[in-house]
Length: 96
Ligand code: HEM
Image (cartoon, rainbow, N blue to C red):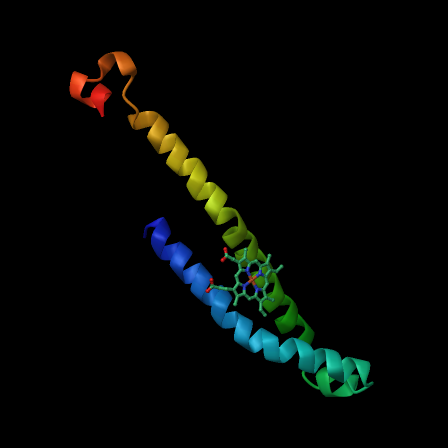
């Protein structure tokens, strides 16, 4: 699979996870702050699930953050490779 495919799915998963997280984080926080921690504690895996979701969002988010720089670096490297030295250009190319 090519990078475009992965980049697209990573962005999509980051985007879709945002919806459950936007609901879960405030609910969890309110329950804790109001002293209703027992509600959360009744689901033993709750903290772990929450941490894993945040970890995935943080990692995919970090990747999305660096993606434009990565692409720019790749583009520059590609251009540097195909650039024809001036002394090898045809007259027509030089005129453009
Ligand atoms: C440490 C955690 C996170 C980091 C480092 C991070 C970073 C990023 C970055 C770099 C982008 C791409 C922005 C762009 O270039 O357009 C992005 C997009 C986005 N992030 Fe996060 N993010 C994090 C956590 C979250 C969380 C917790 C949510 C929501 C609950 C969230 C929701 C979104 C959404 C909805 C987008 C737009 C996706 C799209 O382009 O369709 N992110 N994030």
